Length: 103
Image (cartoon, rainbow, N blue to C red):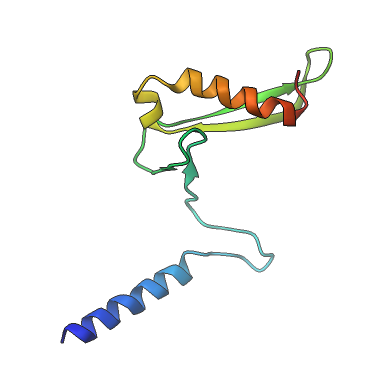
């Protein structure tokens, strides 16, 4: 009896894993919820984490005008609750601005 229950549970897990990858005929991902990762801690940001934020930092050209490009930084509620949100954004942007072509 235990064995059949374990097999059924394993079968359900395989079926759910297969169903979670919803891709349309063009090969585009059409899942309703795609979890984000915290840029600072690399933790998954859960749907119930209402303290998490996602910030888009705009890129500027040489004259200081927004050029339509941006860098996205996501922070979990854990980082913000610890009071590290501002320093995390600052340090992440310092690392990413060279690759973004910002001075």
